Image 1 (cartoon, rainbow, N blue to C red):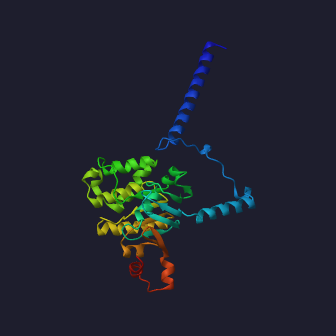
Image 2 (cartoon, rainbow, N blue to C red):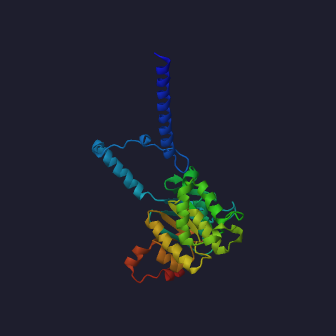
Image 3 (cartoon, one colour):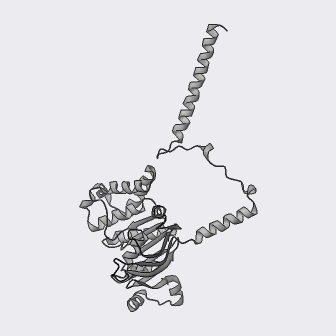
Length: 310
């Protein structure tokens, strides 16, 4: 083989290899998402066709889906909590469940145990007896999985005051591993509801009570939790925002999520909730389904009922 031919052949091989590298590089660049992960169509598992699934497998899948559909988002059984060994029970034998699509209110007088129940549910407080499950995850044995599927708005607006509003939301998005592009879309959606405007770029330390409430709600929703827990959520909100929040709560629940919140606003509870759990001196006294109650008694007045049984 002549030197001239060998040189031409090597040149052609080098050119082909360069083109191959460029194609592979372009494909890799296209497969890198905003969060830095690589995807590939060939890496996706091949799903079996309907013809390849046996009747037994189909029945098993249907049973599994049905079980997931009826699995409670919140399941509390025999919950007890004391703040000291010599103290009385702060809450005693609290037992109820909440399901996807429901808005459930937790009501009672001051000191009835509402905040204690919610904080045990979120694992902010240890409890003495009972079990709590969030989306099937035990809050004691698998707290991380349970917490990743919930958002919690406390009654004291615990936030980082030296952050701006948008920095705090971004921080919470990092905690819950929300991709960059997705958090931008959700922030825009939440801003349309809560309307902080340009104040979202200001330090939270400069916020009013109502503005801190708004930023807490926005941050608690940035990861779209299956369970949204709120402790006295309407306190400090102006009437326009309160209305917008209530409408958003209805939409959020109708999308297959669950909302559990405490409140003293009886009118709001009756017109917003599907159910209400009543607490009195740390004990659960009733679990009312409003639809069923009104079907039995069209003139049912929850405010009168509450005041008589409070």
